[in-house]
Image 1 (cartoon, protein in one colour):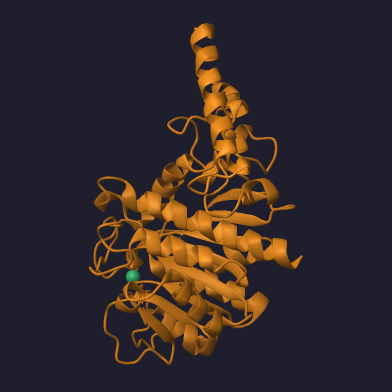
Image 2 (cartoon, helix red, strand yellow; image 1 turned 45 degrees about the horizontal axis):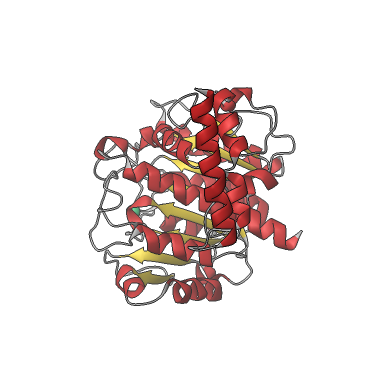
Length: 360
Ligand SMILES: [Mn+2]
């Protein structure tokens, strides 16, 4: 057995040396270092880092298919001391207009994320936010499923607690209504934020009943309540008609298909300026071919490479928090939707960390 392993290590070392000599396909020496022999060694022993991890930082070499599935194998904790980003699940889907199931989203996305924490993310030039920042899994929001009227207040308080500790939050939905109670907490701290909204739908349908809990009208309410600043907000990937979008700039999916990711990112930067940006990503922004597991799919959407490239091109934007919503695992036969959602959140972590790294 040892001989076989030694042989494999020798071959592996030669491959590493070759790649170091010829840095092709964007493979950098730094990235290769991250998948060296040590990771194979550690993968034999690491297990359940979600609760055995001693440190909030660091990659994970735990076998992707085993162990407790916190988001990106981060430490599960309710202690926010020194935390930079708290990932939190919001398993709520009582606001949907069509297919339910997003309450199971946080679990599916945590499981899907087990593929990602063994390397620094690709296309960030060796930058490794999981090693530079304290990112934890703060667990899920607790709420009374049969007392829906109490849900918004419970979620606002949950996020308020995270922000008061000096951390940023990234919520895993849940349906898209969850963004509204989250935004209320952000507005308390930052004032009206610029909403950077990836979605097939505008979610700004007129609805003057503040007590209605609806995942298609909450940004109308957020605008009316003044928790988002509409002139500096922008929507990306829209492909459903809305005659009154409250003056919010929208880049349609077709416009994205007919332009380059860099141009889309530049337009977003121009609209958002240096304002605090809250990034909300409805997974149905992606085409149903890439994200079938969602409640209200619409054809003609973004390819996952387009979303990945646009997000990467936004490096340096003043992001203060975010969410990824509407993953509904029972319509996600291949698991692709949850995988896409986990990648979106990794990019949000990169964006958040990149901004702190550049500015502080
Ligand atoms: Mn949507």
